[in-house]
Length: 555
Image 1 (cartoon, rainbow, N blue to C red):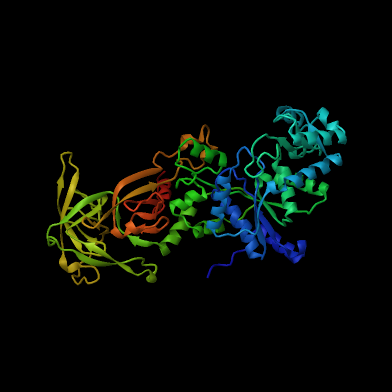
Image 2: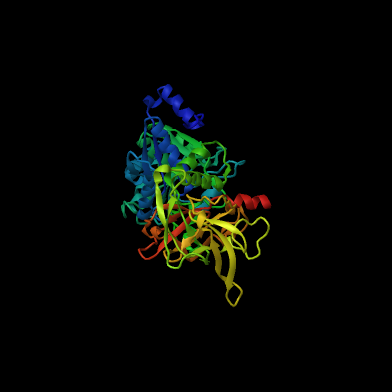
């Protein structure tokens, strides 16, 4: 039974609203991504919060695409976002688009013009920025601010009709040029963009700004709790101003801290750079913090939801250690992943006193954490592969693996004793020779002999070849986005190591993309979509222990 946690501040607001009958006790949230990139782990927190609130309080969540910038948006991103939300285990009530409301939002703008609260601006972006003043000095009105309602209505209609070039005119709200909140100093409402929209085609050449489209879309949908990250706190006054002046449904905005995770970047612009400049293989590269990248790396929906739960909801930004995400997937896969043997850096082991041509079947438990997982059969023969690091020709005192004269147990098989080695011309060990103790067979060992080390192996005759991709953190710096210079300068050159010929149990050739395993003593791995019937490809999800924490401890 899980521990009962206290309510976060947003849950407390919702419970108070329900108790006081606000909006009739109804809860309707929304997740409003812009379809200009793939979702990342930061979006997962927002998804879990919005959908989780609705689930907890018997409400609903809309998926609304904030598609107000045709230059950067694409149907590919729409499809990927929907797939990611479904994969995380959530269902939306309605699939909506800001573009669904373009006509209505346009009419809202006309209403504000008629009330004398919006005007068509001729000034350039630079001139507008200069006229806004500074946080300590008020702005100065441009000549366009005094235009008549009739002239503004005419110019705005002509903007819509396509009479003007991009950047030639904008529509601004007439709010307060002396406001201490710079967002209230006559913000932009519309800009001209002669660009093809992924849904509306060429119907529109003017598009609402985020601040004008967002709150109005919330209001149209009767959203009760509009949840945004902390950087939108200064926008809330404008959100409320538009709703008040338009006299529409009073949706309300609440802010929580965004998710910042170390050793990565969370900016969609920077992630897009990594993709377009080929630092990674794509949005779903397993080193990326995208949902699709995490999925391909072997993370599960439950592990990501558990991570979001553990991170919690706060009012203050902080940096979360990616080790917490790794802990969540380790904790889950320890319970659910079958144990298998895979040799990633193989060296041949010949058991000199084992009968030539003999093959034994050894029973192996699939998962000691799950009795229902059952067991499998392993083939044992005279010639095996073991990890090169499991043998030392001149072992130190506390080396409990194989060496000349040292005993070690082969997992699920026998105790062996190291004897001698064969080397190539460069002095590299090519073959290890050992003898086995027939009376020490696992499960029926009556020898009374004990050893301190157990190593894994695969039978050379029966092993299958696999490609194994060892993924690590993409950046060397804990906060690459905050470093001086180009964030790409801090990419970890060892973030991917490819082993072309690892040896694995033959049953692993039947693995399907997304299947997850624990490679004994090596880590958790998943089958990659690049796999073929002839060759299976495995991605390392995470090591068995947090190697980075150990390294930091040395520093």
